[in-house]
Length: 381
Image 1 (cartoon, one colour):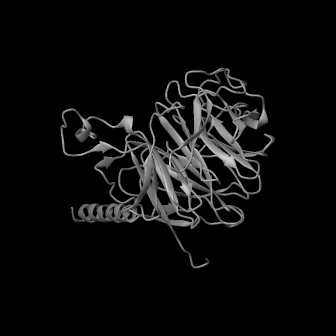
Image 2 (cartoon, rainbow, N blue to C red; image 1 turned 120 degrees about the vertical axis):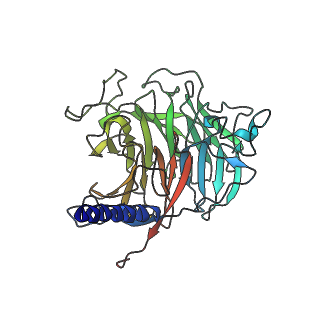
Image 3 (cartoon, rainbow, N blue to C red; image 1 turned 90 degrees about the vertical axis):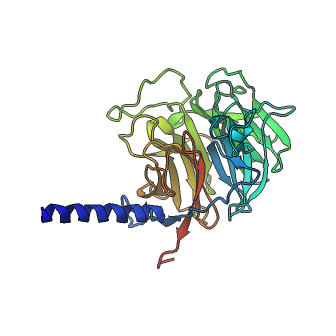
């Protein structure tokens, strides 16, 4: 009996210690060392970021996060995803003192203070029914997308919310080889060298498509491995089958490195593919190959050091931010685990990194939050 009690106490203390470590944000752990001996950066969650929102606001599903040239953090969230209970003060009559939906687009400083906010339907453009993805380009213009039933458009605004450009039309889609219609685009990124916008297109289409970022004129598009896209249903993902020759919807994220590589998150195929800017395939990496369901490659981001040493993958099925070395695409660690506490995730959807190496995340479904993970200096840095 005494031995059983001691065993029980030992397990209990171990669980408590693990819980405290997670609460404190010690959630970066090495999961696989690369052949070059690279180790993962270490992160600690900031449980007090962002600051409490003003105006009795509450966030719905946070569908996108981005960092601009000032290291301000931008999120796009879904006011329509809030329940009556969550948005009780917005009901007629109000059912509770709190809360009212926050605006869809919110700009925050590094400390988590709200700097500006805007968004929603307006004149001259078609606001999406379900907000999805946000990117701030080198001119400080803000790009958004949507994944509602008819959201076949991307929108471009100034940082203060003035409408500039719409590419695609709500309710109009024509397949993965049409040069003007989109198919539930998920994400965007603008190349500062060419002023072209790359669109991860998307939840319906199976491609990357590129347009002039000012005029919206079509430039080029491609599918997995640089192939011509094919909209045939590939069936369910099978980890034991040969690699799919096409993207599976959704093509969920895209980012461009300083040296000209294009990284694409092929979510349900559990892979990130790398291309030249003309669509020529370079290489790929499989992330948690045996992941089923919603897949493991939800979003892709690069570190901001000169060599962009690290690649970050948001995995909303395994509830991690995977960290890879960009040089050899080796997985070297992960941030987070499934859960509801600070530093844990439920449907982590997007990831962004600032110039200091801090990581920001966005959660959808019932997660409905943004989090900040502060990079910790190591003895070798």
